[in-house]
Length: 115
Image (cartoon, rainbow, N blue to C red):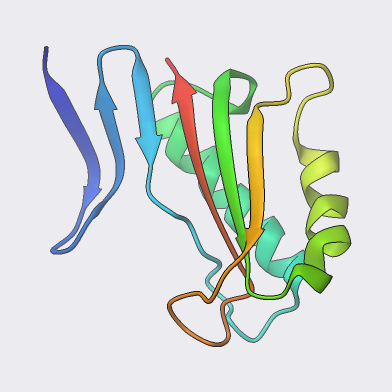
């Protein structure tokens, strides 16, 4: 079975397609100065774009992992997530507080989706 990589970098690919599944890397916002809501919106826009590049979409997300630098941002992140995720098609999801790669990153999200 073939493996296709999208947006390949030195350290990681932003997406990897294997079989009927696409695996996204942990996605962070472009604006690290933004609040958790804005970072979440930027991340979800990137996820939409990556999934489209892999010929799938958010309706086919199987799992999601959300990391928050501060669990106090849980409601802010969810206010954007809840408006984005299709009703009745929510993925299996975990959300935890974690120290992220850079201090100004407030949210990181990784998803796995079916094609």
